[in-house]
Length: 196
Image 1: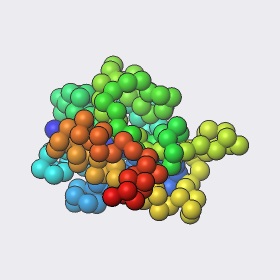
Image 2 (image 1 turned 90 degrees about the vertical axis):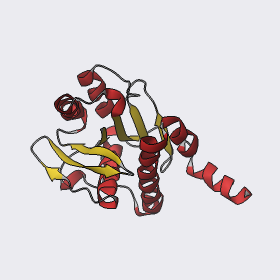
Image 3 (image 1 turned 60 degrees about the horizontal axis):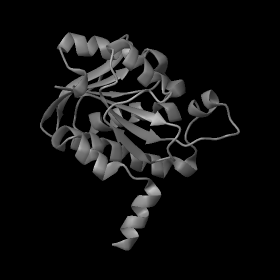
Image 4 (image 1 turned 30 degrees about the vertical axis):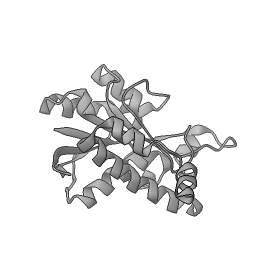
């Protein structure tokens, strides 16, 4: 069984924030594969199948910097190994709409990922990072808690679909295949398509 976790902050106030793009991907997966999410006190959760693989979809509701509490609880309760965990989250260091998949590593400054590493005691889990870019004129906290502007909504919507597809490839063909297929910026992907 896989655990697919999207990171974000709970509540309507944060729903469309850049920081919540992980939640958006989990919602997209739930919709695409008909997996209802049930909201509890600490997390929203749903169990179902993605491309024939049994999954738990998880959205921690403990705010970003305490995301690991919910992840640890689910892994422990269902006896799931960390290598069966996929975490989807925003990344300031990637251009908006780009995807990067990693097998393991440090938090890279992402507080939700840092909380998960701290709570489960390892960084050995797959991450699907979605670029949200940066604004050097804004404090990081203000930027990540702002909504995507209308000018970015199309590229972000495309990134959410790509992230969902990347998760499906991770589950069925492995992380290496997903990395080969999806670790490209939107500009590079457009350039490739023009050359074909």
